[in-house]
Amino acid sequence: MKTILVISGDQAFRGRFTPGLSGQGWSVLDASDSQRALSLTSQHQPELILCDWETPWFEIARSYLKALGEKENSIHRPILVAVGDGQIAEKMAALESGVDEYLAHPVDLQTLEKLLARVSSNGQGTAKLNGGPGGNQDTLVKFWGVRGSIAAPGPETVYYGGNTSCVEVRSGSEIIVLDAGTGIRKLGLSLVQEFKDRPIRLNVLLTHSHWDHIQGFPFFPPAYNLKNEVTICGFEGARQGLQSTLSTQMENPYFPISMEQMPGGISIRELKELSFKVGNIDVKAHFLNHPGICAGYRLFTPGGSISYLPDVELFQQARTRNKDSERRAEINTVPEEDSNVLDFICGSDVLIIDSQYDAEEYGKHIGWGHSCFEDAVTLAMQGGVRRLFLFHHDPDHTDEQISRMVARARQIAQRHHSPLIVEAAREGCEVALPTKRA
Image (cartoon, rainbow, N blue to C red; front, side):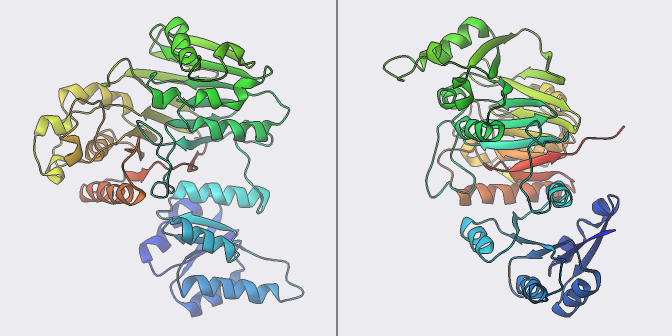
């Protein structure tokens, strides 16, 4: 049986992973002091050591690995994973110190399962994405753009990211791209590097044609190679209307290359029904409360369902008119205007939803088509969602502000004794959804 050792002074953190990993063939040991940590590592020789990035826990693990490396006959070296607060400077310092991996709090079971699967199959090699060379059949969600309204690069947005909406979903051989904001550029570069000379086939589901959801498409490298197949899907006159919208943003004098000059195999699919398939993935759509025509999507994958509602104005705050944001979240009834949205996302394994404001900010932006995080948390709890990602971050919100919003959102869930996992969407963040067994 493979062994993982968790070194931390936090008792809750040490015991968090035992139930889930034990059933997958892992023996989970934990230590809260240096003597026990060194004793367990010497006795059990764990495959992986997970420890806090702070003294003395990290130094214990690193000292053990150093001593192990000095032994001439030592062939067993565990993977060392540091867990910290996610600050860029800290991550860089950890990697420079020689750790194999760095994870940011809160570390959930799915993130750890993905890491362990990679360690088991590839050692310390780089994991392969589904659908690419060497990929597996699990579902993977990756964030490439998480910002709303307009791209906001800069030192104050470097952690969560400044690119506008773009989320990649892999399931088997299917690649589904949710929106084509500026984040799609890096996705395209990654795909070209991954597939090399192999053709790329993917579908882009556009929620609507506001700039922050389409402005990255002219910079999407796969659309410039004829061997690739890029299908753009959308509602309401997409064959003409969406084609015209995408083309117009690339016309002279706005862009040097017209859409007609893009050599890639680009096609437009006009969606007629609210239930349809993308390859072998069932998809449902729901029209949202946002200026113009805007649809949200729910993807039903072998790993679970993923609901994507990047631009929606919920009605919890407008209904209560209560300045006490904490009290708003105590209300268990659902506004009639939100009931259809609740039905749509109910039971989702992952919910990615518009959380642009806090309650105070929302009071100044009623009718703008965006929600506050308090409403997002309330809706997710009411719908029995497993994991919530606050999305469409306001371009004026710094990393610090978003982190504080996440903390307050988690407090709401904790106060209701909800098992809901709350996070803020962050560029580069990957969510693995292992295939569910019947």
